[in-house]
Image (cartoon, rainbow, N blue to C red; front, side):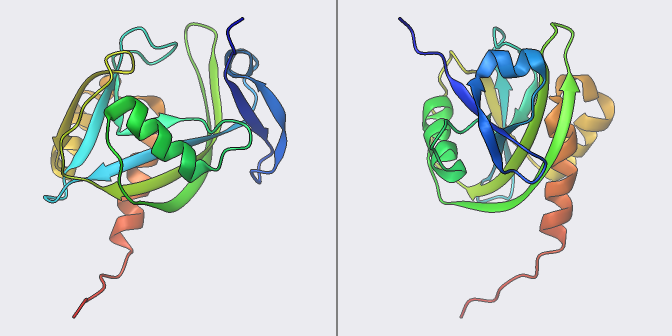
Length: 180
């Protein structure tokens, strides 16, 4: 018997309320814990991933480096490291930045209702995408992403439209640290 993945159901304060099989949680549109990893390279370009075409929703759309759900009993950061390896064949130090909740209904009857933890990493090495998860990847500057979001918003995932501006705002308010 195949083990079906479960997600952690949460309330609006990210307090666990139970677990549920992942697809059932998406069918019912129940709030669950998730994460979105953003990766910048040494040129401050962002790693974007094109989701595999056959994904259960948003197939073929571009998004941040990695998005997924921690398994019951798994910490968000551990899950983010696990999924970076499974999807892109990479790993790096990750810094938790902020979290937000969103709800998106898809044409296939599924609903993403997530309490999304956003993490940031820096990585400039080789990327080895898993074709079961990733159709393509590329690094783009913030200005290139801004232009694409304006000219072709339909090629990006719904959560990228929400998280990307929050990430830009967060980065703009950070005070640079001078290291001797």
